[in-house]
Length: 56
Image 1 (cartoon, rainbow, N blue to C red):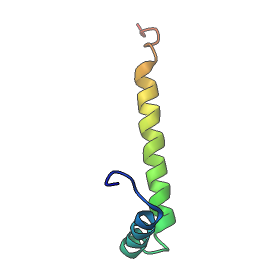
Image 2 (cartoon, rainbow, N blue to C red):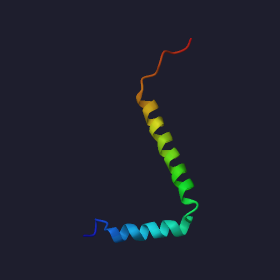
Image 3 (cartoon, helix red, strand yellow):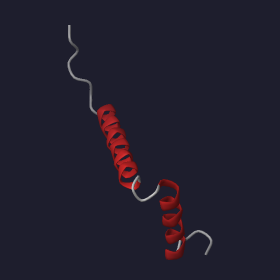
């Protein structure tokens, strides 16, 4: 099937990521990615909340 990814595809992707970033940099890259996702989610949550009382 063209649309599905097998275990071999994910292994190749993992090897490429390790070659590009190196094993030492990977935790910091993943930490930065997690911070970005958390920031994005909090931004979406803030938009959904109704505005509080206007300060006068």
